[in-house]
Image (cartoon, rainbow, N blue to C red):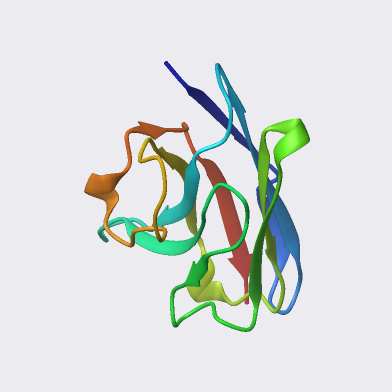
Length: 124
């Protein structure tokens, strides 16, 4: 069993930055994705990274503004968010995919464990 805990959310003005962290307990390192869900909308993929950080994917909406990285010694995956916009407002979730290897998937159904989420609010 894997437990994921997100942190780093908060309230920020347009153009500001936040750094989210996702720390896993219970084992080594999985393919990890960040997703977000705004009120009334479906959960959407934001970014994903494989176990060694060699394969990274971003949603088009965040490419060039967000950076995903990981520190395997600390079992932690980060999401650095710069140039935040009001449309980035959502609950952000990290998720772990138990596959041994592969490109981070964009579809939520590939992911086996989920954190409880952290709220990110961007004011205009």
